[in-house]
Length: 282
Image 1: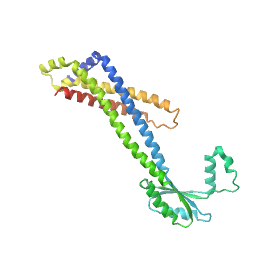
Image 2: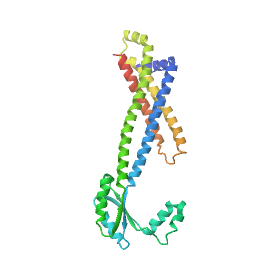
Image 3: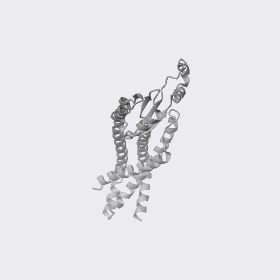
């Protein structure tokens, strides 16, 4: 009963202050949209980093007379090695031709295949760094039949450092956006409460509890966050469709983003209204 009355009062509060409500709703929707775009960029960035991390490997070139099968077995036994793939000389040339389709004339200057056979060595995730690559590469070089290894340890370490910087930046930006959404909803609810201050005082005089008084404003914050989340998702969807014309493989799980936008809007709306009510009802 009390909740029903509170909800009706909440609707009445929204309609009474519709211009203020819609203005703050627009600001909240934009803030939630920025939060959604932040999440989209972060998800795609970490997907890219994860894919690059999975491609980190050691290339071990074999001597012409090396026993490839024995070497593959020996490398596979090294602690920290996850997978070993043998690439024949012919396969290496075919792969290079595939990658250089626009410059095949460069390869025509060679009468014979200049590429040696090799082993592609993939490591455990904890060893996909400069030290790990150097350690495993050193062990591989001790095997008879290995001509040379390449692994690009410095580039890998730079990738790891960039990932850490991105993580710190992401967390800082996340906190700023969340606080901005809470602040917008908090200011809206606070202004609405002040506008209805005389009514609230009368309700207190007739014995209304703080929880009963809070229901309409909590409902307003919830609705504001919910609608703002829906608008933010629609704007994100439009942005993804536009972005797909520039980026071929944008990762965008629609259902997860839809639910996340709604939950973020509702939760932040409840928090903003809760802070405003706590300050007023003290």
